[in-house]
Image 1 (cartoon, one colour):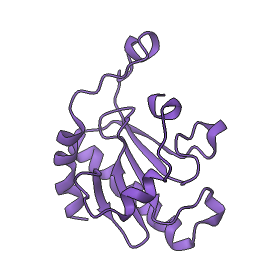
Image 2 (image 1 turned 180 degrees about the vertical axis):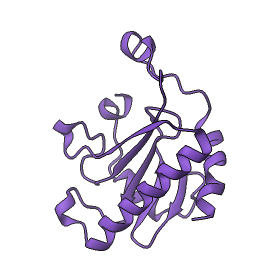
Image 3 (image 1 turned 90 degrees about the vertical axis):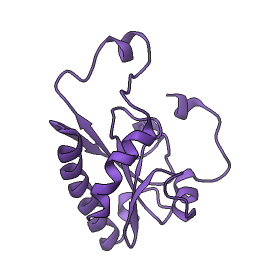
Image 4 (image 1 turned 30 degrees about the vertical axis):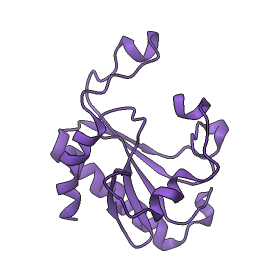
Length: 151
């Protein structure tokens, strides 16, 4: 919610990250020919990833066949990687298209890959409006990066 209701920059954060060459600073794990994989800076769970096209598009119908295929391929690889690296027991994989559907970034389509574990929800998000993440994003990034280097 902090991102959704907080102040915004004038540009698109996903376009800015895609065109910046500092992948470590931007938590970009992998780049394909038309899409890339990055960590969510406001994760639902440890290892929450996003897959986005380089092109600034807001709907699935505007994606090319290649972009669609590469996004699904990254989702599949990310599922395997998160199972191997963090022993994820399940996943939420999907998209929120449009602000009314819950998209925090509603003008640049992206897919979420959220690893899940039995019992990964507790009273903190419900009562305290706070999600407890067990490690810093940079630590998670360092753990995942070698797995993506092999893809």
